[in-house]
Amino acid sequence: MGSTIHKVSHAQAGPVRARRRWWQQILGPKVAPYLFVSPFFILFAVFWVFPVVQSFLLSFQHWTAKETDWVGLANFRFILNTPAVRQAFGNLLWYAVVNNVYQLSIALTVAVLLDMPFLRRVSGLLRVSYFMPNLVSGVTTAILFGILLGTGGVIDNLLSLAGIKISWFQSTEWSKPAVILAGGWRWIGYWVVMFMAGLQGIPDQYYEAADLDGATFWQRFRFITFPMLRPVFLFVIVVNTIGTLQIFEEPFLLFRGGPLNSSTTPVVEMFKLAFQNFDLGSGAALGWLLAVVVIAATILQFSLARRRGWSE
Amino acid sequence: MNARYIPLWRRTVITLIVIGGALFFVIPLWWSLVWATWRTGEIFSFPPQFLPGPYLLDNLAQLQHRLGIWRAFLNSIIVTGLSLAGSTFFCSLTGFAFAKYRFRLRNLLFYILLATMAVPGQITAIPLFLLMLRMGWVDTYQAIILPGIVPAFGVFLMRMSAEEAVPDELLEAARMDGANELRIFFQIALPCLLPSIAALTIFGFAGSWGSLYWPMIVLRTTEMFTLPVALSSIIGLLDAPYHLQLAGSLLATLPPLLFFLLTQRFFVKSLVAGAFR
Image: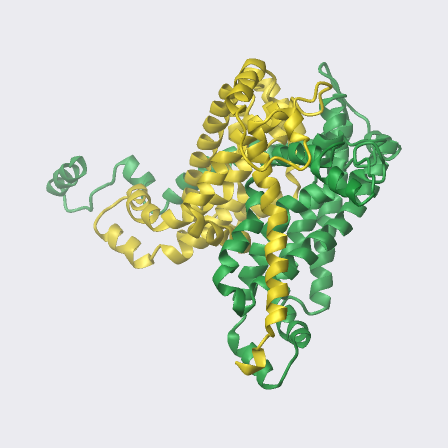
């Protein structure tokens, strides 16, 4: 209402087009996009861009509540000489390989089986069953597997029925597999959902043509399913690797990184350095070291995929 | 059809494999809920308990006494609710602007977004903690909510959605009718974006509700603890209160589970859309 009256009064005052009020200009198509993106980007600058930059600077500083000194590469030298950190990166390689092989081989198998035509009526329900653990938080997963694997827990009992005794929480050999088991329970269903989405995108005609040629199950998988699934597979393996490289909740909650650092990871060590020892500089240095590893792994996977012609 | 004929015995074996496999995923989940109603002795019984027992209220009362679990539940609701409301709003506003306007800083801002996404989130925790110290925001809601309210991937998702779901003709028509851009956003773009907003909410809910790392760093007192932080504080203790851990877990698991069951049809679609975009 106000604006019409305003325009009318101007029109009466002269032949010139009505001058728009300041708020009309701001809400016009020239200024509005800035208005729209600014709340997000102000917060994004304060809570993401600035911390990323500052953590980079911090990694070359020694921080105390009173003062910060530039110390060059001393933080990096310190963390690389810390046995727990070295072990953390060693463990990380193990986790990355085992987690990908374990989770993705099971998830792909399940997805391919669930995609079979004769299971179509129940595949939705089954997919939901596999997926549901993904709704559970890492804390609950850690609590649950702490009980299942603990002395007198279900898995412990089942294994001793078979005459096997594994002390998951005391041995340095079984802590990493315990982390993998717990993580796999939570994530395999998620990959099943992703793979099934990819499988449903493969046109039936390809399979029909293969059937006419008398292709076996393996031939169909080898020459149709897997090649058609490559983009999804690449996505899944990249995301799973990034997630695994940043693994924290299971090793921290189940083992606090122990026993004897056997399950620890860079994020666990970063948490300990920065928020338990309050050596923020070394924590930041470790964080950036991990960042380099994550970015390098991602680039490596994409370039390998490109070289093998997986992605266009 | 004949070529794809699979013998009955093979079909049976495959069916048994996929159902048996599914049980490995569902049964532990069921146990995590059911055991919240038992005490530590029964939790470790073998064969394990499959049916609910009588101790849930007792366990919750103990947990309330020890940790103030209902307050933690409320904290989680507040934090998750505000995070999701804020992030969906900011992301749709920003995604819409990126999709439908050409402005000078557009590409620059988008590259900043991309570059920041490449860096793992945990390294921001240390400077963020210093920032919160300086602002005096340690142990507050805003300290948990604000960093999570601007997820970069949300902008990507909303930008894609806005490009597809908001027709340019509709925007032009509204402009001809004299609507200002803010009104265009709220009355035209936002309704078109509602399915994507729902997808973003679904996609972000479980993550926000279960998040531990940053809340554990920035929260100090039990009154401010969210559920995951409260639960993590009773893990690994000498008296090992497993029944209390599980009772708390039940509270932590039920909301995302119910949310999932209510939105199920839509849920998987959102998940896939969120992931592949």
